[in-house]
Structures are given as structure tokens and as C-alpha cells.
Length: 347
Image (cartoon, rainbow, N blue to C red; front, side, top):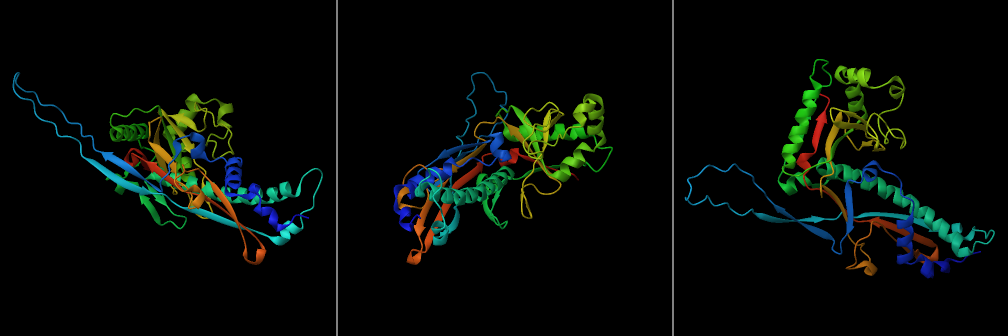
């Protein structure tokens, strides 16, 4: 039978445990699948954002030889953005180790490692769900805590305001294509000179249903979708466990008015990642629009090192009655142009 002193070996040190939790198979999340958030690590516990306003104005005609109108330099502003500390803990009691029986060729250390890795996998699933939730918050402009309290207001950080548009999906006579084109123009105006490769709308279930049931969209189905395609679930991969949606959008959802529409499935307990009746129009392919930066853990071993997505460490309980395992992540989620994400509503 393995003894508790097995946890004193290198296999259960902070380096090995951190490697183990980072090697755990990733639990798919839609925003991660889309690859919108570029990930990197930094050695500080916060990051500085340099905001430089770029005002574009029309140039008035002048007389040849006359002095040109001077153009003032853009003002720069440094804003500090702190990381979010996401710790999780689990306890492995002495009895759990005592009852481990050696089987086959596995050693006691390997068996205990399996117990630890199972706990780390569970902790990581909770962290992954939280990261997805906070990334969705960054996309919407406000990163929220698990209780709904505000952690980071990106509109305030960048001095911007939310862009919202009601599509009036509850009115059959609504000229929906014109509404969508208007939303695209608003998005392009907010992006300024930045180019994008496509547009995707992540929808709540109620918004998606109202959208596809609107006569303007339904007529498009009748005219351009064959019967076999209509029998498929076109809500998107988040709604049908990763299967492709079809309808002109190989990565899920369906194309209408030059936009990919996709039902986003995200909910933990009673918390919806996208509010009921809402959707968010997102430009794809915009450089540095979204980012996730990881800072080091609050361990002595990780001081001034580049941050990793996950960390894990263990510590013996009082009187040697077991081991407490901790997993943590310390991310900073950003959307550098939150006003370019257009919030759509049914009415």
C-alpha cells in the first residue's frame, strides 16, 4: 500500500503538477474553438494598455503656397489592467490513498498520480467554464465574476460606450435585411480602418428561434435551402455537440445577408453566458481584437516567470491526514474595441 510520504517526491511537486494540469485534454468551449482570443504569458501580475486616440478628419482645401494646418499629436494614455485570480482546491484524504491496491504493472506512485490527475481534471473543468464565461464578458465589454459582480469594465477602460441595435424580430413587416446591413455598417464605423474577414453573430436560444422564424429569413430557406438541408440542425456546433451546421458556414451556423448566425450554448447553473433575447455581432479576423494574457501564480516558484494557463500545487494537511491540491489560473481577458461588437436584441 502506498504511504502518504509518496507526495514528497518530485512527481508531486509544483512543476510536475502544473505540467499535468496543462496536459489534461481540453474541454471544448466555443470561443476557444473559434480561436478569437490570442493567448500569451507575461511575467507581471497586471498589464499596461496604451490607448492612443486616432482621430480622422476631412482636410479643407487651401491656397497653394499657404501654410498647412497643423495636426496635433494623438494623446497617449496608459491604463493598468489587473489579472483575475481563479483558485480551486480539492482534498485527497489518507483513506483514499490507503485503499489503493497495486494492479498489474502499475506502481503505487502511478496509481496515486491517477487519483491526483482526476481531481486536477475536475478543477480544470471548473476553471475552463469560468474562462469561457469571462471571455464572453470581455466580448460584451464587461468581465463579470461568478456572482455577477463587475470585475472589469472595458467600456470605461477605453472611454467607449456599448453599441446596441434592436432588430424588431417580433414584427413580421420588419425589413430585416436592411436592419442587418445597418448593423454591419455601424460595426464597420466603429472598426475605423481595421479590416475584417467575416462576421459572426452568436445568439441566445430565444433570439435564434425568433430570427429563423422571421418571414424574411424563412423565405430565404424556402428559396435557397434544399429539403435535406432543412432537416439538419443548423443552430451551430455549440448547440449540437460539435457537429457542423451547414448552410454555407463550414464552422457552424448558417449564412444569411453575408453574416453567419449561430446559436451559442453556454450556461452554468442559472447563469446564461448570453442574456435571453440577445445576440452579439462580432467581426472575425481583426488583428488583436481579443486577447487572453496569463500572469504567474502566487507561488514562490513562479515569481517573475512567464505566466501559464494553469498551475497546480499540493500541500500536506495537518497531522498528515491527507493532501490538499490547488489549481489556479490568472487570466486577463480583453476586447480592445468593445464598441465594435454590436449587441442585437429581438425587440
